Image 1 (cartoon, rainbow over the protein chains, first blue to last red):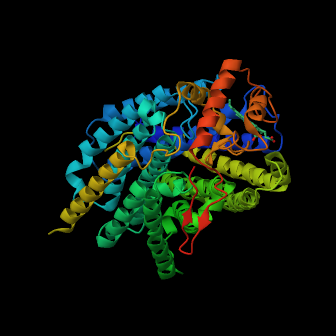
Image 2: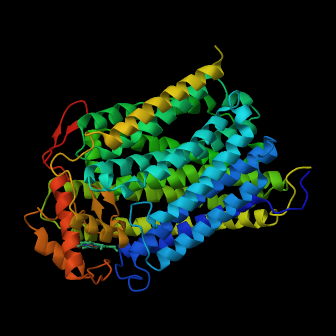
Image 3: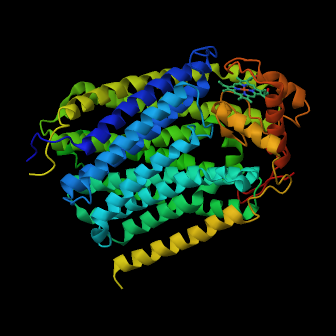
Length: 449
Length: 141
């Protein structure tokens, strides 16, 4: 029984995650208009301050919601006794304070200026401390269970550990020896970025496997040789696959060759998805967890679409053209919005359902929003790929057309990309509104009977 | 042996290789630029200005960064552009670029940074050679 009583931190993580999602989508939509109106907000909040607000909010959405989910599942479903409940609260408060601080800095133009981590470098210290608290609590609680535990325990654990490591690594440029060697700095920068995305994927994909095994009521789904084989394959890609981002960076060739070989192992993952898809064709197991099921199915579609794109982009002779174009953006948007967001919305829907069995998902507006969301994301994704192809052709020709002309020539594609972005924002707002409404009433409740 | 023990062995092996590989990247020669190993203090200052203003939100270097402005890797050695050209843009507030107010010293530093990056290699790598197995042999400076 769930009773109203104390403030629940795991639900609060998710509520703040959902708010971050709305902010990310809203700012993303606003800044996309700069593509066709370069003077937009230029005097008030220029693009170099708005863009980090967008990226940081997107990362916050993924990280906060995955974290809140893991705390919730361990506590309420796996019935794990937490090492320290106070530490969860401190973790939450620390992340909130850091989130606000980073936003205030962006607003006033106090910037760190490294791609993706555009806040002041010192601010990473408290963020890292938050992750260490999460790690202590996680391992302190499940350590004895991990060894014989399901694969998602392993995934969550490695996700946390590697997140701590790669966030630190992303700041190694603070050492003069690395900073003054530009190519080394650039290589390490790519290494850390590729791998910390891999780390949050461990958290999110672990959540997906958790959800599937609970919905199917089949614990075997998360155990056994095969699923661990894929876990290790994913981990190998997390550790070594990043270098496919550096095919054009003039470091030693073998580093890139190694990455090429590792990246191609993802074909095995792809073939496995196709195999599972064919096997499950026509089988329906949705019923109770309607919305969760839908979002998980959508995420599977996005996994397939993006893995094809990623595999193609990892072939050096194709990467030569796609690198630095909007095809890269298509890939990152396809994975963060399509895969991560769908899995996390599935997770939040699952939690809402647990807290409130009078299911919200029969709500028709949410269902339509779900359809609009996926359709507009598809248009968005395709328009980015087409925009990328434009630029790739332009780059490889080395013609007299200037960058500015290329930009103007691509305006039709930008308009499509902006419009689909508007629909993504609107449809997400509907979904998030309903989730927040249901969660908001559940912040207060007792964790256990 | 039990499956779970195997899993631990595999995990430890992977982590071992990962640590060795990472250390090589941090300390080894393979990731060093062969043509321009060290940045001058002025260039480092320039990079700091680049970061403080988050130029990377719009500009790329080696294809890493935003998409609103052109890639600046080889802006200095580009026969149609070059130092004077690049310099004239810094305070111009062209299109979406914010209207910065850099002093002459700050401009010197930014240009020194661009010149350093330029000396490390080519992007796009126009003279790359493609082979049948999908590999691309890039040209080094």
